[in-house]
Image (cartoon, rainbow, N blue to C red):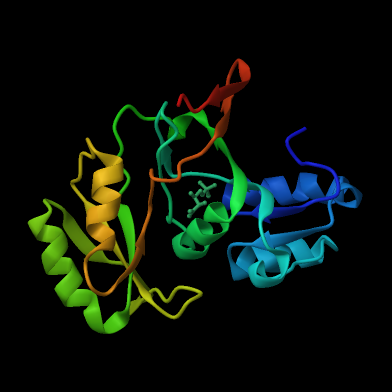
Length: 210
Ligand code: DER
């Protein structure tokens, strides 16, 4: 119901979106194409015979559909557990509407129990980590098999623990001001517009209050 007919839509990343892509494949005739936020989602969309366009060719998108690692009732989020945060933030910014799909384990009162992902240019990793400590966090370099996880953009990720984020918009801006930060996983300046929350009583719809 939230996929507008004959438009180009933005598609996020992660295990929830993987299930969304399975459903989207069934109504793919309704959309023109998709813009994807990760190489992994692009591969799944193509497998489902959905055309994937670049954002530069697509222009403004009708809607962006993505999951979240944590989300509040004000529809501010932490994202980036899958390391796709930068492209997710770009595609979200270029979309008229952001629809978040999540189960109720993701709904929190205060953001920050989930470590906040920060994508950094590799040469800046130690410097950015020291600056994040000054902001009260405990950054940890995300590793896989003994090596730093490399994002689709060729960068590294710091996961920041121990943050109780009282001011998500302020912290999002403050972290983005640190030299070497590409972006961080707070989606508060541009939060979701609608949250479709799976609960044991069915799907609940939460809308961002102005
Ligand atoms: O990593 C991400 O940003 C994902 O979109 C995340 O927010 C949701 O991932 P999940 O659906 O696998 O929990």
